[in-house]
Length: 58
Image (cartoon, rainbow, N blue to C red):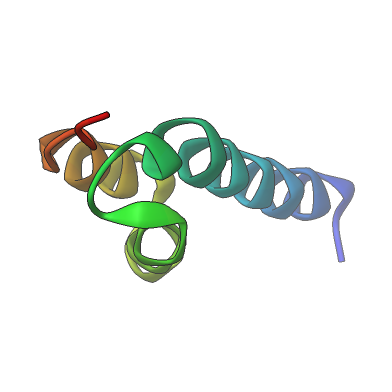
């Protein structure tokens, strides 16, 4: 496996984690669904879906 592919996979995992942890936990979609959408499609689509979810009222 190329080093480039390994770096792409690691960047994909890191982006998915960051979207789910820092943005998803503050929204109604939550951490789990945020990870689901990010892994299923891409971190970019997961980011859009997460941002479209409403914020949690405190």
